[in-house]
Length: 237
Ligand SMILES: [Zn+2]
Image (cartoon, rainbow, N blue to C red; front, side, top):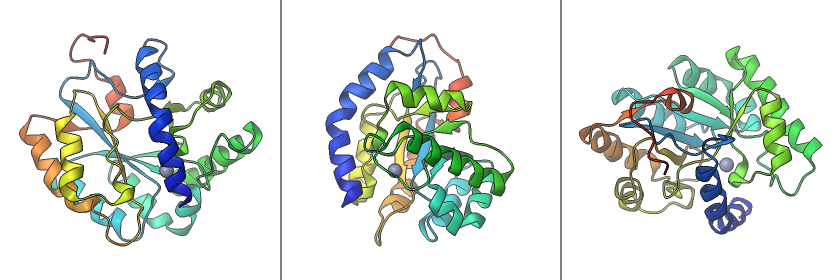
């Protein structure tokens, strides 16, 4: 229920967040897409690792030659460090999604920094590398938080406008596929969740989506890789 409230609130707030983030693309503080990337997209998975779904998703990614980005929760990483290591060893990017998935607007900046730094340490212990990306739970950011993230050499990440699959809410597989395919733009960052309760539609949706995206000529890269690609002139979107 907690996450539902966050996400419901997000659906109202994110309109502003995304618009402003796209608009300040040149300032480039919050990453939402790379419109100059050409036919590349970044698949992102939040809230894991999960003992069942993350493994399934890793298999599907491997079968499709796809690299993705996992924004993991520190508490879950402590519980399933082997899965984080497996993600990392397979060449996927590991991002920080806080230690306990708090509402970042409901805690102090000091508490927020503790959440982030504790998770940086946990991930470093597992992989030997500190994440370069951070995604705030529910997508909530404020200037001081973005500053703190950049202060530890991380980039603040959101996702692309209209590429929130809302898969945490367990919509139908078809609905997830439709959300992605009907709104697709070059350089999109697509939001999924690898942590869910029983009956997650995400793995089945990926089995359809990945071949469909490849058919359209898209390749799958991590968020950090996506940010570095400049295949076409930015259209300013
Ligand atoms: Zn989350």
